[in-house]
View 1 (cartoon, each protein chain N blue to C red):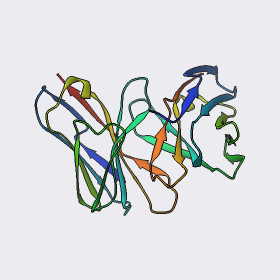
View 2: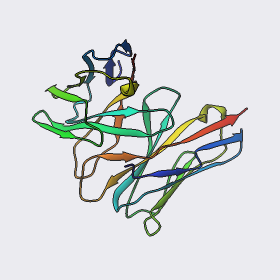
View 3: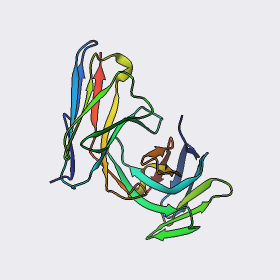
View 4: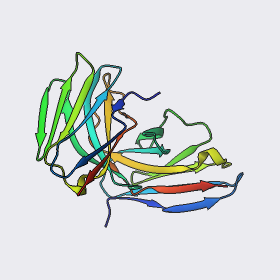
Length: 114
Length: 112
């Protein structure tokens, strides 16, 4: 089984709908991240969490919210989806340490907002 | 804004040739990492080089880091068609921000 899983893998929705993307990990890592990727661009950080009680905004958090339900679960919500949120979304985890360790990525969720 | 800028944006070579990708960044770093992404898939970590290291090898990969120029390069030797992918550098900024900043990536095509 994959260490970092994301559901759904693909989602098509309409403008104004609320969407939740879920991420689960079995790596036992405390740190979890949500990124979005647009064509021709690298990954941009949306939110990150260093433990269950820690939530931090990333580079592009407007229009998104997150919930860290447990060490292993980190969900990303789009409260009212808009077309420019169409993108590939990745969840990632990393271990503890003074320096950021290697990040382990899920397979991604392709979201289309019509 | 993104920390890393990669050059070239796209690279096409023949199998067996070497591929070199470059990454420049703006701020002091703790480490720099390279990741690979096959089309539409999640990123996979390739190699990490710390700020006090100048060169690192892993199989056919060679990474160099020049902190005075704020730049890094990734060399893939004896490339294979299976190396076709996008390659991203990512930096962990000094000061323990705890998060990586990714470049825009280099798309590598290796022709058989």
